[in-house]
Length: 306
Ligand SMILES: Cc1ncc(COP(=O)(O)O)c(C=O)c1O
Image 1 (cartoon, helix red, strand yellow):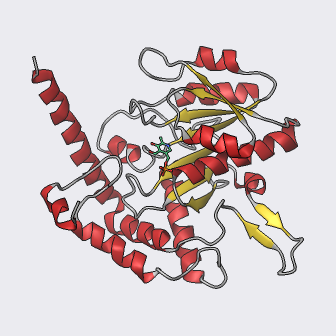
Image 2 (spheres, protein in one colour; image 1 turned 45 degrees about the horizontal axis):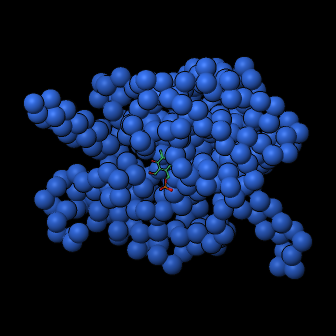
């Protein structure tokens, strides 16, 4: 699609392109180009990038229910956020529960990147059937748990059906069994809070729900940032010790990183910062309104078809 074509549709997507206005696109592109050459791996070399990244993470934590203990990481996308959540839970399970090859239990609707990541990480995944309303079935999750299970995974919402798993119930259940709970809010993280703000009922789903250990939210989806932008948030940043990679057996000195990537593009960080500060809550609320109006028009149209 040529750039000019965007003007025909004010809001385009999902799922590959998230476009609001050409003005916002320009803000994103200019910020990206401003930081085209920097490397976000070099926090000391590029303090401005570190500052922008820190501010984006703080905005994410504030929006998504994180308390004073919460921490976060800017990643390249939903898949990397999910990969890092699994890696963190795996190390936690190995160190704190003595489980060598941990297992993840989730509903079939959870994103494919869980199995992709579990393959890389030497973890196993058990997927359970859905309730009739396409949400995770607690009874089936419970039946699938065994002594190797370390993690539950819930979607907010799941990509196939666009509905939220019962995250409060799953959180209570995670606490009861001492399990890590990851909430995949890659789609909902930067949309659902604003849909709630304009008056639609959204079930509790974020870090404020007891039992939620980590949450992924994609800035390059409904955050409207350039691609290569997502957040992995932890309810307790102490657990970053299980996320980080440290290596000191190297002539160059010690190496420390919280992401899968080593060198990281700074453009998506700058884009996310600029887009978030340009839109603010009011801008994201307006986008939520356009999306919900469109949804209602679609439903009304479908209902008119005989
Ligand atoms: C619910 C959900 N989680 C994770 C992902 C993976 O995100 P990405 O494609 O940015 O890696 C997607 C992508 O559509 C998604 O819909």
